[in-house]
Image 1: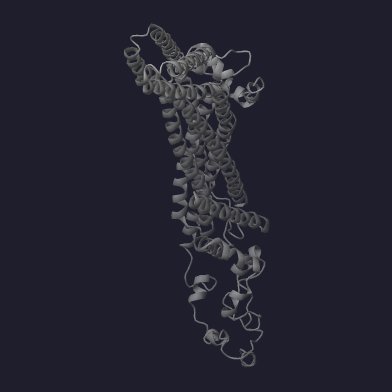
Image 2 (image 1 turned 30 degrees about the horizontal axis):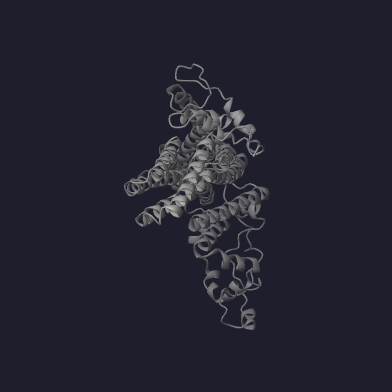
Length: 579
């Protein structure tokens, strides 16, 4: 077991966190030794947790300046097309969304790593608790057998053998052996208090970890929902939806900074423990364990003697001597004192059970079992636990910064939508170039459009129904709004043109012409996600010519972001439903 201790070496990130400056509330340097019971050390951890509050204050200050600038500055409009120059705004929304998606991925990994480390810690604590509980039961059972059972049998045999001095001398020698066993058993450490502390620590740690894991999972899902609803709000150009998103973005930003402060303080405190865990455990167990016993289990080195070896050896020799004495009495005293057989056999059974318990006690008192649980707990806390906290801190930092940029972008979109609505209030409804007026106006050539859209007749009858030819004088150039839509979609809007002659299938056949991968995707995803995905796809196809999409490249990145958000949201929904 000389190499078992070398298996644990504190990782480099624990030393890096351990070297963080520790200050109390009076900005005085504090020793970075792990001492959670001291007020100065607690103040140093609270001081580190205030880093999140400082970051929140700085981000709110920067956001206030940016929002004031956005409110005071006028829109940058193109005088010819009256379209706002929103290329930077689009890229800002896409980049912040991608950063948040990446941060959420990091957060999921960190949350899982931290949960694995804490689970390994609690599992080791429960194993150690089981070992210590077995030690307590064996010691209590052995002492009970020796103090009550053996003494009662010896007292009755003393009355039976009162006329034989040689037998009484053998009984007094056995009584001396019983006293030796009782004395050596009582010298074993009283680990009842350690047993209670380990069970309480394990239960409390498991409860805190459950709520921590759940809170971070909800925060991760909230960030994904914010990104998705932000894209929907920008596509639908809905002001109330954007206002709601700004409120949730602000809430998520506050929670991210708070989680950053809490994660930093927890990681630094845990690293202080991981750098020198032996010293802390020796100080905590000095009330009921001696230093040599604590070092024996913490280091488990062959150079360190077993502090219980002498006591166990004396107990074993005493039990063996009593077994020899009982065998002699059974052989020589029964012909003269047949009534002593019951007590002699009872003593023999008690000695056999006590010797068996002593062998089990020797195996449990060996350092290898408890030392393995100790190493497993250290590996879980200092490797997986602290590493997961670092990833969660990185997630909180990235999410807080990205949410700050997203808040500015969403507020800019909200102002652009408000200014655009004010401009459209001054448009004349009788203007022939107004799209609303064109939809309301009556067109006699489209009075029978429904007959061209009917698929009840054959293709030949449809071909015979030709609209009256138009003269060259009646042909009008496409309106201004169609020219603007060609800049985005590449073709003017012909949603109201009849479908005859364009090779479009009837509505009843469109569901059979879906690509195979879409049909497979709809079969696998389930009804809830299918409704969500179809709704999102319909909204973005309907508003793909929105004012904030400037080029095909930006549309590509925007739709890529939406697809990633849908996949991530579905993964989160599936994960929560399984767990």
